[in-house]
Image (cartoon, rainbow, N blue to C red):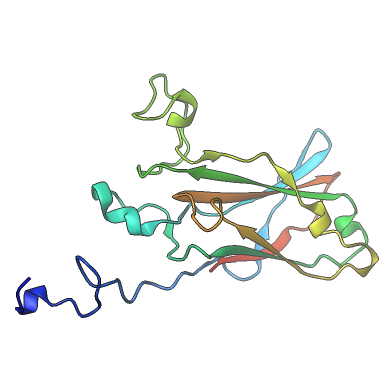
Length: 197
């Protein structure tokens, strides 16, 4: 290499200087988000909250001329924090409450689309069932009721922490869904807020 300006590499990385000024990782819901119950079906009331689709490897967006899809998360150490409120209003608030979560993911670099009807012909690279939405459920629903129902010392609020799939080497696209069920009419909406950082 010559000594001209074009060949200077002061950071000592090849073929170019290391990245600087990477965006801060942060996403959040509005404070005090209300998640409404859907009404009784078979004697059970259900409420669901679904996170946006997170792009956990936004550094790969420049490969293959991809569209920018999902909320970019620039840190492999990021966690999704979900805070629930008003849990101690009455004894009945959590008595019949059950809570679980499930994860959705995709390892490919293709465009993530919103759910739609099943396709008779598989989409390029996807079988019939997942041709309609590349972000698919990858874990069974996991019961976490015991993280919320804390007995006689029930606090008014709890914070739940969710790690992304991959143990420090995250899958490309990730989404979390929380499902609450209540035997009988649940009543007031669930008050919550969530943030990813």
